[in-house]
Image 1 (spheres, rainbow, N blue to C red):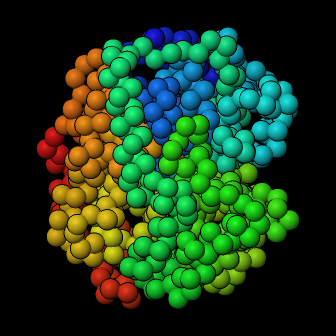
Image 2: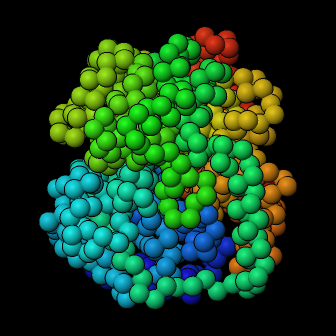
Image 3: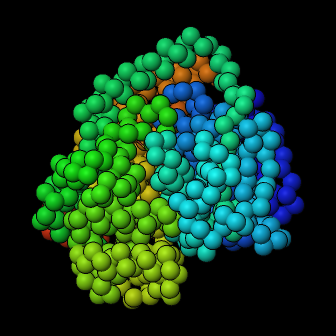
Length: 573
Ligand code: SF4
């Protein structure tokens, strides 16, 4: 039986029930959208008693299908005040599935001031324990203390001081499979602050004594589909040996940097002249120089293995997982092209428990507004340290890019619905920009990426339809698997593979059309939540400067009207 565990932080009551009928056929982001719509007042205070922190496994959690043990984390976002889902790899998803738990719902606020740890014991019992001795630490130290207390094999979801202090850019960090460090982040939208508001420092998952085994309707058919899933991932260039395994997600820098998509100096529209210092070849060189590693998984069983370990010159690990968005937003977006700085930035953000994307974008705005010079590595890290130290400006940084823009009276603030843009210039990748505008969650990069589609990304033609299709597809992806797997499975020839997996697992009939309907229902529920929270089409727009300042690379501007963008929301599935 797949279980839902409710934890009431006010009464301490913990209940475990079977997955309700209404949640069946949904995973991760879909489960969050369903529960938020049914149970949470859209106008509630994100850090108040009425908001819920929901953690949900995918439709294929625990089945051994690569990349499917991700966790979605959601609630109402303190950063955007919209519904939010942010997903994360690491070991926690698989371990939760081993306990048969599909969803954790953390509700209400505690009456006491003590910090708590939610412990899922090896025998399946779920209890709240005092966590005051772990609180007050950032994530790396917290993980060390938790492992001392509960053993080295635990799965951990933890917040740093950012979450404890209620920073709106705070993340929830999860330990990864190779290093055990809390280097995987449910980063976007301030879910760390929601966890902190409930005085929950960490969720600890002990290895299940008796693993909950999935009950397949047709195990033979499932195993055949699983083999096909792995085969096509291995054969596809991006997800096979010569793709992400070889150079990590730094390979996207080569593409975005060549076509004016890479953000440079706070989305100025300029070309990055030092691309060679920051491209995928230079990344590989920098990692190898100090005996780092490329091509490692963030969670057991992932065959794509897009992650990496970056060491300092003495061979000590700085970061386990430098990714495209982080590289782009603290790198060229801030005029920086130094790998050690990027790695240090990544480590400090993971340790403090903040979103590297929001933080990189905030530093870009601070540079643009003249607070620190362009490309000043030390000054950039200094601003991150202000967040760590909780200075006045550090707390403004912790409130996100929009807050930094307001404090510095900046003219160019790249946010949608209060969330910093992902690292794609909207003028030159218009389909992705349409998705970032119309997504219920602000400018998320995973909401409907359109890179590589057979349309001219700088022109309007075809982008609305493309964004609509991609948003449905990637919403299904967030119900089921990692987006790099979905990039392959969304191909018409491959879409039957996840449908076969789901049919063989659950017994009812799954088709590619049904998968897209699940995606469509997920985003419709999210839009509905926002509407009831008070959002309108006026909030679905890019910052003004993208409509008036031309990209120096292509001459394009972002040129979609409010009405044109709303066409995305007329879903036909
Ligand atoms: S593809 Fe990368 S992010 Fe996705 S599950 Fe595998 S290692 Fe993690």
